[in-house]
Image (cartoon, rainbow, N blue to C red; front, side, top):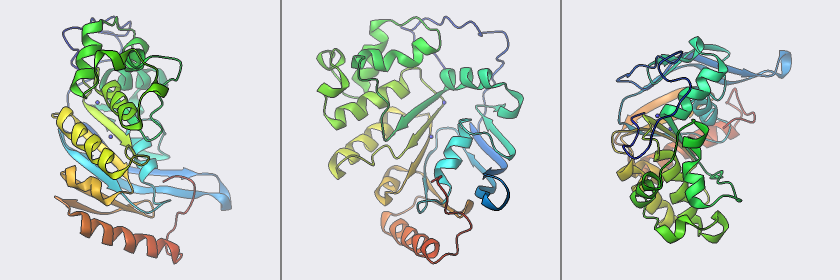
Length: 278
């Protein structure tokens, strides 16, 4: 919620072996005392409040909470897309505070995958070109066999690879987004509401696919959907920018009840954060 390169892909990275000494870590994602503020003075809101949390290697975790709870801010800080106001984030064994913005970008391109509700597929590129995009951005030469392999893992065929995103169904587009996240064999995948725009059947299919194809990869999913936890090892509940609880092997009905409780508490005005981040 991140790289061993596939044998069919040839690395061509100008930073390799020089300024990017990334290390392996049994806990690929770790937040220590992370706080995130937005705004200043009386208008300041606290999206995350002294959050300490770790995601073990190969774990599959759902991060849940009511709207405005801070769960998307948690994902963005964990991925280095937002800089915490205080505290530290370790991603793939590296303290992000020790890296420049450019180095953080290289780390994400090499070791992290992303899947978003909006998919972010470029409409003018074919599905094959969209899947290959992380490799091209990471200065890697791309071979067709590598892209075909990534596509096959998510159930896309050669004909679909030649099409534009607009020519595929929503479920097929989501499969392409997962293939793009997987193509570089990341250590961590961050997914922000990956099934929010899908019908229940397609959402279940996509989650099952992500669980099967991402084996060995740490997956962190931010979601409102209690059914997502059917595929997860644990659920992290966020309320008012804090970690309310971490529940192993959660049940969807219990998760739905907890989310209803958190939503009611937030609506009653007890939340210290009701700003833009989710």
